[in-house]
Image (cartoon, rainbow, N blue to C red; front, side):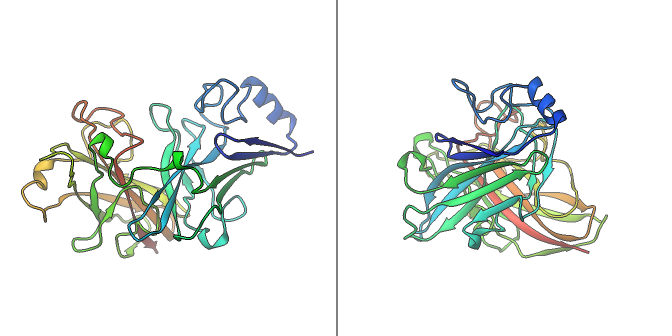
Length: 322
């Protein structure tokens, strides 16, 4: 038999399939692992989190308007494992509906970041001004158990609206990111598509390709905002492994990947630059994600300095690897 459980608060539907005796035994050791949040608990319940063996769950984070009248529906994901990384290709186990949006979602799912948080606003979908109360639905299926995790994104509720790109209540604004010297600028939690700010790069298996991120911050709420900006790179889509050097994807490194404000404050045209190299294990088409975020002001280069609610920027680059 198959059962369905709808979690109304998060808008997630879970579908359960018959399990083997080993799967039943594994679940018995960690009660409640197949629930996003137990009664009276919270999403990151310690019974749910483990090193390996748990699912990855799509979560609708909210929406925000674009200057052109369209809207962004923003999704994140919750990898319930602290070590295990998933690669779920676009297809039967990883799809967006309506089909016109399918292909924008990530296929590489990183472990739970330090601090027990999920990965916020990794995907955002642009819908037209007249979208109304229709849904965009992201589904991930755990092929090991047959569990179906579905999260609908909708504009219906004002409580899900984000202040984006800037947040006046926090007197904060996200960095601006360029991936080419004269190319377009990304700002805010835009997704693949709107965050595509570079031409396609060409690379060869095993040979490093240089990635250059150019950043600045024009904060309208703070004069001479001199906080540093950190840049990290991740694999977003692609068939093989990608290694970065320096590896700024780590959540624990304190001293690398930061760009000082002095590199851009002197002029409205200046950008601070930082380079890293990416090496690909297999040929194919890849999408890499750059994430730039502000030092939050508590202390310079503090571990877990990333603020999940504000203010950071996604940028994406295609790489064809031969």
